[in-house]
Amino acid sequence: AQSVTQPDIHITVSEGASLELRCNYSYGATPYLFWYVQSPGQGLQLLLKYFSGDTLVQGIKGFEAEFKRSQSSFNLRKPSVHWSDAAEYFCAVARSNFGNEKLTFGTGTRLTIIP
Amino acid sequence: ETGVTQSPTHLIKTRGQQVTLRCSSQSGHNTVSWYQQALGQGPQFIFQYYREEENGRGNFPPRFSGLQFPNYSSELNVNALELDDSALYLCASSVGSMGETQYFGPGTRLLVL
Image 1 (spheres, rainbow over the protein chains, first blue to last red):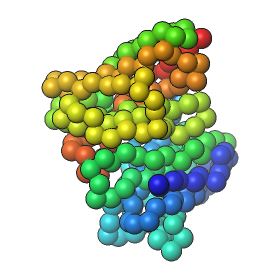
Image 2: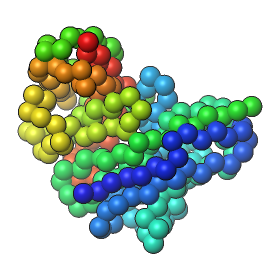
Image 3: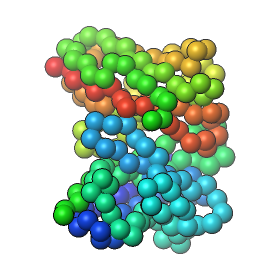
């Protein structure tokens, strides 16, 4: 079964600083990979996804992620964070080429932005 | 705005009761998935419905059941509520069931006392 590990439970970053959130996955074949963001009291918003092709994926709100098969990683990055980026971030994996496309989520990383 | 709505937003029940949560998907989205998100955890897959039939289930007991209707709405029913059922319940809709992007609603927060 697939699994996702987000090693950082909580990260604090200064506004304007760069950000990298880590995500490692376990899956035998090429996975579908996602990053979602959840603001307090809100549902999940898709930031970006990787299905195939270029391993550097651009998303909304200035986020990008890089798929590294050799490291089983899909880290999320942003060159300069804004106070509005404070939220919970979830990495998720889905099995490719399978009709039952459930998402398996990591436990999330809470991002705090300080002035 | 994802176009996916859920009702109610909050709900309080007592142990042993039954609850029905509702989701309205985007028009044209024939797949709906339900997830349970306990406090401090990532969402856990409950089940998925595709064209009104169950199309996969996670590790949840049979007292969790669902329905999907032709008008792109769906329900999650939980019988014999337990304290551990307290969580945020999210529905997500998509077109088809083969790796398409899932769009999440804002969730229903259920508290079981």
